[in-house]
Length: 244
View 1 (tube, one colour):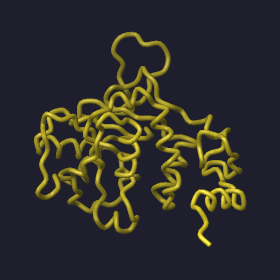
View 2 (cartoon, one colour):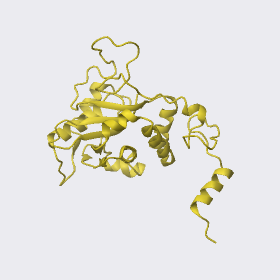
View 3 (cartoon, helix red, strand yellow):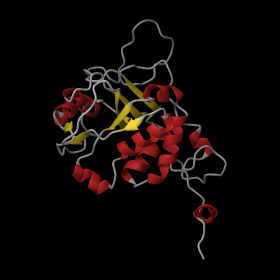
View 4 (cartoon, one colour):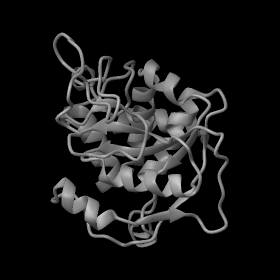
């Protein structure tokens, strides 16, 4: 006897109710998120205006003239503007960690929900060509997927309006993880680490937006933006799920 997939999924949720990826408590039905309980979901810190136009981190307090952003000070951007959906803290951080390091593909639906609750971000990307930050082939084989490509697909689906995902870049340098390095070291390690895919081409009249999971120092995104510019992109922008 064949059991409908929807019934099987519902039955498994009853027998094994989902556990919140942040607090490990049970997730009750009826909420906006499938892998976050209501309390943790309320702790997601969405980025709203005003924010830094380079890295997307929000400004706090009253605005009075130009403001220097401490999160991207010292970065000479190869891209035009940057946006982030949420701060890389608390429940949002747990979603990213689950996706990147625990094969947590089940959190992608919740990450798409985050994008759908970020209308300014969706307006920014709508109709653009989204370019995922690539992993080195070795790293992608180990992980089984590129999380940035999956997030780009989520973002394109949430934005609609002709938004497309094109994997235009490849990673040519198999650099070690950059987590423990400062911006200067990251920039040196990532110089010329990316290139246009073999046989690839782009239309310079299109709006190209790089997509990554987290903006930390901006070094990876900057290196990717440089590669896009060399290939003919005029004013690439960047978008990340989180800003940390």
